[in-house]
Length: 196
Image (tube, one colour):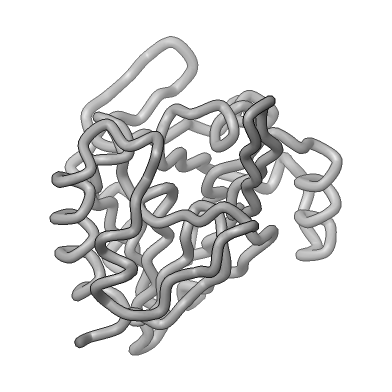
């Protein structure tokens, strides 16, 4: 089976002075022997409906990949037990963790570190035929009230009010934009990676 990618839900985020509402982009990646759910999020009903639209149930998920440990991205990971949860360079099987060199999903799916939003961000670079898609988590994200940046400079320098380190985040954005054709942000619409 060739590697395929499907966006189950486009991420949304809206912040006010009183609080927020948000759900992440949730992605399904299938390869020859793995079915990977990326960022299961916080809305169980929405997630189960999206999986069923793909003809899948929770039991069909072989791995859960979490881009970072903010609750809006990872809260529902437990629904897929006993599927291992992959976070950066660690694979958790229940209470046991093992190290991962970024290649545990096979040759078409690479785990890449992408620090800056938090100290432990990572993303997936998925190759479908000749197309490379970066499932980026909150390396890139926009509040729904804001216009999504379109230029390379605007995308790289877009301010993340929750960034652990904005300067590091911008370096990581620049590096990873060059590796992908399509970017799926943590919150916002997928976009073509601008080269200039």
